[in-house]
Image (tube, rainbow, N blue to C red; front, side, top):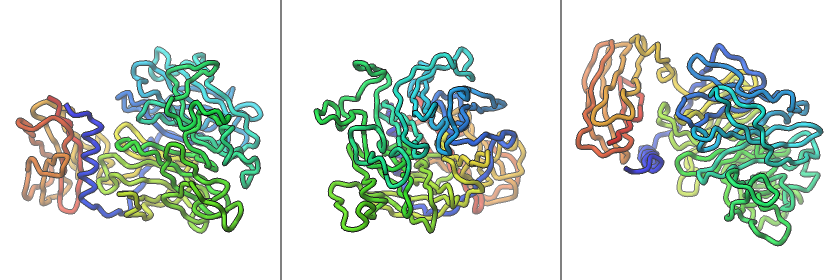
Length: 474
């Protein structure tokens, strides 16, 4: 059986070859019965539960699912969220969370330290054990801003951590180009081992592992001002980061091993110190930058790998906290081939989030969560039973072996085509074609003779289209 990640990568390539043109998308509020206290992040546990977890700056993590909204972990007694950029800032679940129940948080406490800790879930899967905290390490912050905040596990199983330059303005503490401290860097550590007096281990292929210069071996990349949010493309493994600028430029970076991203020599692709004729030798330039006429504080996002918005597959979605603008960029062959606004957020964009299915969320500082989507594709399961909208339901069962049932609903009479494609974009089945009246329909897809893997089922009804992933396992 071909590994699922490889199958999905082929799917992404097949969709990219369709050359979909970026277009504006809608933002729809989700969890309408819930209001969040300064939400800063949304993520999932990767355990197949379909739950999402929302980080609230004062010190709580909420867990949400079907009929579920409760506090998963409460750290308010420990967290110092007084400075505007301090508080409970990051959350990442271990890649094997379903087996080991371990997850990791980043919060600020005292006056003023960044703390990175491991916790475990309790016997109740919707409740963490607050007494299980194991502190990995702490960093003293010289100021209250530029604390970074992102935690994320890479496809290599290591934990990546973002820290800003220590705050103030203009890198006044000189951390951006200083390899002897952890500020202004993206770090990479092994949480599954310990090493010497460390509560973690240094991955042996870190760029400065074993150096004799006194450089911190945890560093993966440096020269960053405030990498507030970064993410891994779940298919390619590429590491994307939004680095918050100083006075003029915001930037999107592709983070590479041992890369120096220029701060404070440069702000974006422009000289900062000195303001002209700076030495850019060996520095990594941003993939995209925008000036403060368009926004003033970037919030890094995700490469879209969901099934709702086929035009966005493979597009990096990011936004700006101040202007509330959301952009999408498509990066192929080492260059940007598309880049344009996608939507206007109704709220300052604290962060983006991603669920298990690869759908992308906007975390609003207004206390609400929004999802990228179109009205026709955001119909709930309950609404699916009523033919009041055009809906292609998820096939059942999924994954399936041999055959599966596909249901769809038409709000009005329409010319219909229901097709299944393989990962190379070839049509393997035409299930329905022709004019159909409004109502509910079902059809069996017999996959006998097809190889196992992921297939793409697409329903077209007039000008409306929706796509679902079908997983065939033999």
